[in-house]
Image 1 (spheres, rainbow, N blue to C red):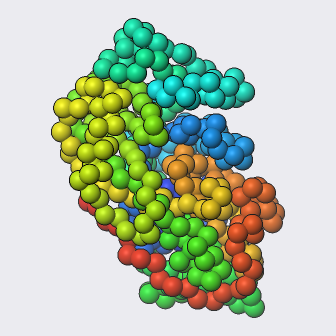
Image 2: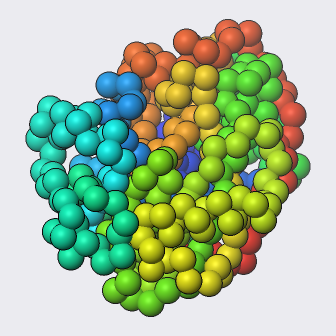
Image 3: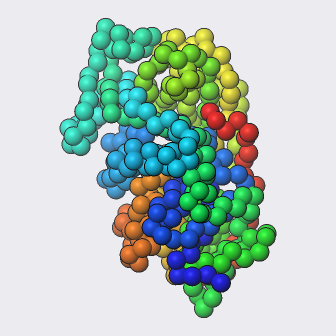
Length: 383
């Protein structure tokens, strides 16, 4: 039996974990299901930059969601880490845009949003970032980053300590309804009943929802490299030509990323690895000689209008979706979770017009759905 304050969440990436955290804080009993291992898909594969990549290129609604995510992150990671005893490595390292074509729009966006910036040129740029080859850079000193695999681990442990029930390797195979109202998720282990359900399965969300959401959320592959460096080689995130390098506290440097539309295929290839390494060297010459430690790919959950789906699924009262954050899944995890929590607590039909699932999803009720693909697993979860 379920109470009116039971919620079951399908998907254990950062968006699902953050949703669970905010609902537990609101006094809900939460069960979280993952088809594989918590946080091992896009949430593990991404870079963890807590700043949008060229924020001026997004819609006002996505910009607002991203800015809210930035505002929430310091307290969010502090609270989660205090509960778990782990360190998510939320650090304010700054971000420097090196694209000449982005200087004017970047400055305009910063002025509109009260964002501190500094234009660095020539010697001043190279003194701050030794090895940088560009002649000018627009530096955002307040930009931060988080070590996203460790944040997933921290949330997993903290949620357990706060009383959430987390079931891994438990694929959702269908949606159970009673008189047209959500009543639980069907799994290979049986029905998990609840008065409310949240689909937060990333790129697999449409597959889980079946005929309710055909192709509403689809995968976009991104390949990443990890370079083995030493602490202090690079102090800030660098961004140029849509690619970035991210320095970790231990000296490792992430290089990303590609945008590849190839379904659920997560292969990597030598040519892309070489291209990513070359992009890193173009931004900072000193990275050319660093050895490649790992090369992987992940699948981002995208929507056709590049805006997430946050709200009630049409046709099934009590069933919600929180997915489709695309390039900003890590950054927007807490703000998306906050938005959905407020919708559930206040029982409002729409959380934000721009993110209303009704703009894309069908309204025909569904009782079953296809099983998601097996989840990607990598034991190297502390990158």
